[in-house]
Length: 133
Image (cartoon, rainbow, N blue to C red):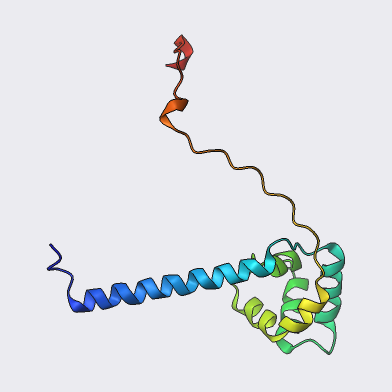
């Protein structure tokens, strides 16, 4: 019973599905670049020096000024992608992407904690004690 799904609704669903797939692909490609690389203290120092230099784009210099003023951002957040929601961060990273790739050598990311297996019905306690209730 799909009578309520008019051609307009079906077109909107298709558009939304395509947009979600595009975002998923973009997120995977962004994660590929960051996987296994965590910016080291030395990387951050090199990026800070570059951001204050005349070689940096105006957006990068503006970002450096904003971070120096204590606007709630850190270079680690910028370089790990945690601050990618900020338009100025995106603009600065896009403008100087090649130079930043040269500056950031990275260090091994800390290993992820092991995942716990999903709980099954077999995990129920066999014996019940008074304090279990």
